[in-house]
Image 1 (cartoon, rainbow, N blue to C red):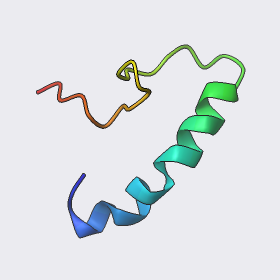
Image 2 (image 1 turned 45 degrees about the horizontal axis):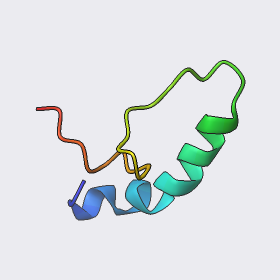
Image 3 (image 1 turned 120 degrees about the vertical axis):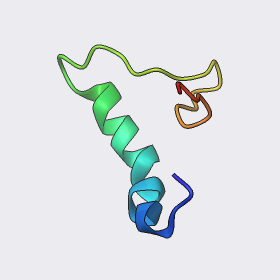
Image 4 (image 1 turned 180 degrees about the horizontal axis):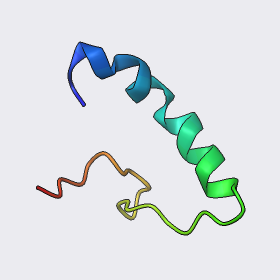
Length: 43
């Protein structure tokens, strides 16, 4: 996520997550209580 190659994607995450959360049929996304999904390291 820190790579310069990911900068455009990372900059758009807020907007992408808002769209996903409002989309019918979208079930869930893993996130902290504060709503941050990039703070969780699964590996």
